[in-house]
Image (cartoon, rainbow, N blue to C red):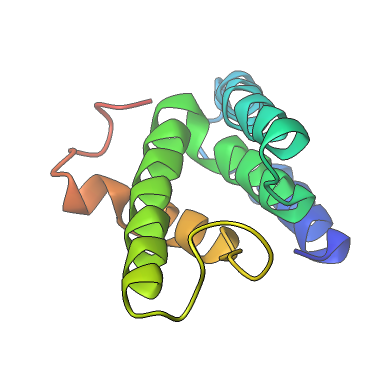
Length: 126
């Protein structure tokens, strides 16, 4: 994920006043932190890319902590299933060089479809 894209995402939230006016900053900061810090830990220990960390943190800023973590969980499951399928089809090795699958598309999928797919009514998870 290019820094320009992440910067635009971070700058657009306050400009458009996304979320409830009084609590947007608190929810956004909580989401940014609770989604970004675990992803940063994975980047430092397990090889997750920093672009994925930045995108996940920006996603947490918009979605808030509950929806942000739900989106990461959904994206992780989807990414794991796709990676397993690629291994079974012989397209990727299970681990090592050439086994990497980009995570940002699955984070996007999780952000877009987590609540409707899991039947979560908007407003119950913050």
